[in-house]
Length: 286
Image 1 (tube, helix red, strand yellow):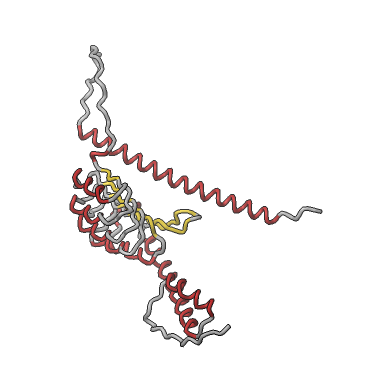
Image 2 (cartoon, one colour):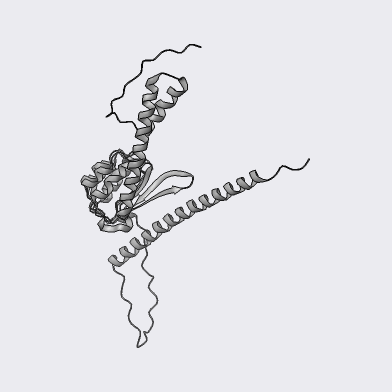
């Protein structure tokens, strides 16, 4: 078999290689045994991967120092969740700029933080599937920076300043399945318009919260002297009760989801241990 001579390729020091580009091009070159150009490329790839790992470790350090958490979703899944929820309003735009250096981030929780509309530019290029923005100052202009999140499935905009006009920025996110807009400025018309653009999407607002019926009136009885008259339940109290019930339901679902992930991880660890014990058993005597 003859091998064609391929002229060595020179790569400028400023040329950027990603882990993906290295994987796509380096393996075929090595398998084909091409010339010195492949060695130059392999060196560049190794250097870039080392630098990328260094940048990621530094980014994670900064995120955790600011009060955020970076967690692998499960032992069998290399994707990650980043949460700033517990850090509260101390989290500002500068703290989420480091997200770009962290690989495989698919869940991001910015709820109750001080992130602004301008700060959401930092999410460009991420492959997010779930995004929490509830109880933030995010408005219509902030949603314009989410147009590129084509894998987004879940978006929580509870208690934000988003309006019907802002929801139009989400029309191109065809994988969306659930969007929460209660206690925002979105109307029923805006909710229906968004659902009409994306098949299978459920937009949850105040009109879709669980309905609590007023207690049935009991037959009049002579009140006891010390008994206090029951005050009628106001609409505001009903709405507060509905919001609380929905929040508790969502929290329970999240806890159940995490419990299932932990259970799956535990089962895999047990399977791995059983496999190790099986390998260590001596051969049966003939």
